[in-house]
Image (tube, one colour):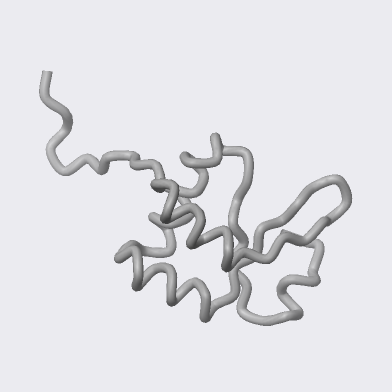
Length: 85
């Protein structure tokens, strides 16, 4: 049976892609949770290198991490320090 025409395949990030992203992430402990923040300039570098959109990056990250962690896209230091994400 063929798939739906135009449907997007969910694809995991490979090990090299994951390592590239992880080295750019900032891990912030917020209560009992760890938040993964990605600054705007690092986001631009990652999306252009991997040739994917911000939304695709978030989706692939969740799939590759068994849906356990979400990346928060930050525009500056004040965004990373807020606790309302």
